Image (cartoon, rainbow, N blue to C red):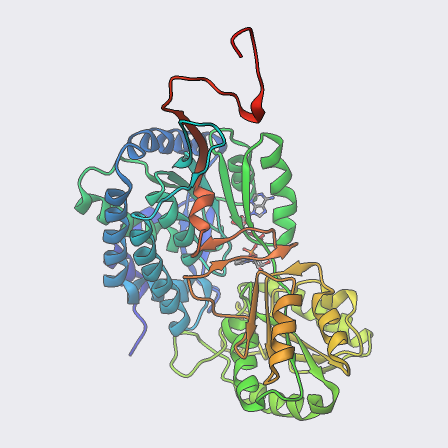
Amino acid sequence: MTAPSLASLFESFGLDPARFAAGDLLARSPIDGAVLGRLPADTPATLSAKIARAEAAQRRWRAIPAPRRGELVRLWGEELRAHKQALGALVTLEAGKIRAEGEGEVQEMIDMAEFATGQSRQLYGLTIASERPGHRMMETWHPLGVVGVITAFNFPVAVFAWNAMLALVCGDALVWKPSEKTPLTALAVLALFARACRRFGDAPEGLIEVAQGDASIGQALADDPRVPLVSATGSTRMGATLAPRVAQRFGRALLELGGNNGMIVTPSAELDLALRTILFSAIGTAGQRCTTLRRLIVHANSADALVARLKTAYATATVGDPREPGTLVGPLIDRNAFDAMQAALAEARAEGGVIHGGERLLAERFPAAAYVRPAIVELPQQSALVRRETFAPILYVLRYSEFDEALALHNDVPQGLASAIFTNDLREAERFIAASDCGIANVNIGPSGAEIGGAFGGEKATGGGREAGSEAWKAYMRRATNTINYSLALPLAQGISFGPTG
Ligand code: NAD
């Protein structure tokens, strides 16, 4: 099957190509460096107007019953289902993911729509025993307002869906600042949402506003007091700048930041299974997932055998145009990512690391793009280099002798997103789950490729946020504790007596 053209993709979303003919924001394909479109970036003034529109929409939206709000999300899911291939192809074009992963990202949105539709009938609170006679105490959940969402280039559509679909059923409106590297996918998602709104009938205009631009627009969103929650996905560096700004105005920040994901392989592990898992987790999405496997902590007795098999698998994995069938590894997002990878490999070499792969590929066919052979780096210790996230396909291999040493190595990084162990030893598995300081801890599957049903997110420098499944919806609402007196007396809590009548 040949890949659809950009013009046919625009057409399937009802987007007029004339909209992408001029402007200072450049959409480029990492596949070959081609310019896909130019569009105007927002300014603080246009952002402010968009926030005002979202605010007005939210005032109407919050009065609509939650299960009816869920109906809009259900319709949006239908639009996504009908346009799964087209949106997946646009993700491939703009973010460079192979087709299976581009479409997988859209499937995640569809799954999220179904989950959020069900959740719209499950926005529940507790009833709590009151110490006062004739009183009832409960908690109720209310819409929060306008939610600001800032997203990263590597999940240009799914991460927004995690946020937006729950926020919508919770009665919120959204202002979305997508990555400046993926502006077109955001407009396609918005176009599909607009179709769902038309079918829904009475959805207020402005329920989702998209503000395009770089970090300065993200900062303006973070600073705006009309936005009670800013949900931001990106590097730890971004979170460290953004979170204090939001906190300064007493807003809330929901942070999904960088990972540095490890996997322990113990002597009892099924090595065949481990090998396949490592490949998907370490080189999938060209090592540009927040959950990408970056640190392999292997028992010294099996390390040589595992590295030898990994080297063979790495050498034969097809690196190339992500639109072509058979490609497993597409391009890096841009030249900066390539330079960061090469700098990390040079540092590893200087530290005495043994490096396999990492070289540039396809330079003649795609001179304006950055394709690399994923790298395996054997290092004697977990240095400062290993402890920071380099957003590229580098897998550091570290060896251990005692299980406690493996657990200590595993946790000794600033980030805490995803983790895994391969073992057939029940005690090791349970000890790992208890000890891993990550938001995700898996046994006999890799750190990468989460399902939406479980809450997603990480600890430490990953930011502490949780999105998608489980009780993540609570972040998009405000909680009130309510006490109702149905007696004719006024007893005070803690038995306090106040005034002449007590
Ligand atoms: P990035 O931090 O460069 O940019 C992310 C987004 O934040 C972009 O929209 C950018 O414009 C914006 N931004 C940057 N600085 C900002 C600031 N000071 N204030 C406000 N907004 C700002 O990240 P990236 O290169 O697009 O994505 C890769 C990073 O994202 C990796 O670190 C990866 O681990 C992380 N990531 C995390 C998750 C997760 O769920 N934990 C998911 C995807 C990506």
